[in-house]
Image (tube, rainbow, N blue to C red):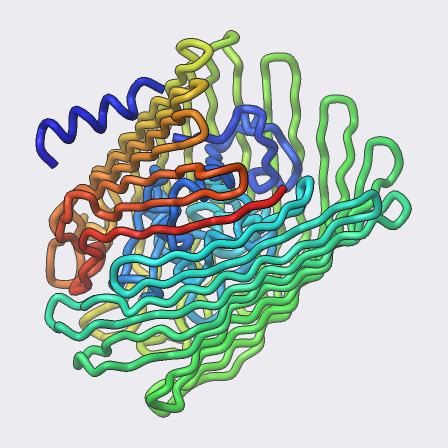
Length: 585
């Protein structure tokens, strides 16, 4: 981009990013509906408007411009993807889909690469340990994907295409009435891909067929809601010897929720869920499959200035695998009771939570959070939080390739400090400090070629951010400095940069919108190499043709930078994508 182009772009954008509105109601941070400005723990929301403007092809692309989330990816669409939240491991982030645990019991991290943005209404991101609310895996935080709902009813369809032989099509509709609502979304993606390895010219493609169905029915004062999300397809890749291979995958979550009031100030919510994560190799009999049946019941009540909730949680999980002629087949049961309280007293806010988990393999664990916020005045809020979280090793950690049956659970103790200052009605500054000490961190030992518990990992970080919200223009800038080290020898943990910056801008021009997202990431250590830092710039646009017709445009990697987030896999060069959409409402 030359100086003239840069000046034009700045002039176009800077006179007026889409942030979560201050009156957004979120549930993930406390398991109860709370206004986002009342939460003590840092929570970000990506709403439907942002999702549409981003033109992202999957959830990982949607998250990569979110401060504090570092993405590691083995190449292009459909390739294995890791999300490192505030320096923690990729399997330390709990992925929920409509409140249902989506992390498999076989390979730890959720399948971010297979979740289509077309099925998503909003994403809630909680930064900080939340094992007290959700149990194992939530050491770094929680990402809750909330699928689309009816609203006032709509019908829409779209089709598009672009670089790397990419083709897309989707349809979505919903309707609502006095007794309930229902809806469905179906999305199809197919791409020929590009050469994902730096040491091979072989291109690898990907296809995905996603469906999301839901319906709710009011029965007296109660509401019964059913949801089902499913993604199936094929992902091509290269093995260690650069042999072209491919695998079929299936990810799905299903849930049935019964919510009903218990008097004037109390309510009950019962959630029964089922999850499947299935990968089958096509050039061998190898496979991994994880299934989980869960029951989650919570009763909430308001007493004076206390918002209390308590509940029970139980899962039965099966995990099977066959790899290179050996495998495992094991079942795991987990039981838990939990309780939490949100307290408001004038300028003071307190959140307390505790959870007792009985894991049939690793015994008992008590996890907790204690947080406090003080509204010093109408503009300044100070906060502090302590937390204790854990993660139980999954079946692959213990019995897969390089597994170790003697692994112990990872436990983490976290401290957070924060300040929020409203410079004016439209300008906000925030500053966060965080420290997370993880005992018995599970890492791969290249001397024994097995997973081992290392003594301790130390994570330290600071985030400084500024946000502006205007009538026609929104902006957000965040800068992060962090370290993630093995405390025993001071070595850096892999694939996490120490410095990063994100800039998100959005400008509305009448019925049109233009977005600009920038990520500047420092170098990161990888296996036997150091990956250089990079800067990624995406330009997006929404252009209204008529009342019902709209076209969306995305230019990926505008500067055409060559970069890697995991060695030896290359990320996408510059690409352009166009979609035509029809919407009736």
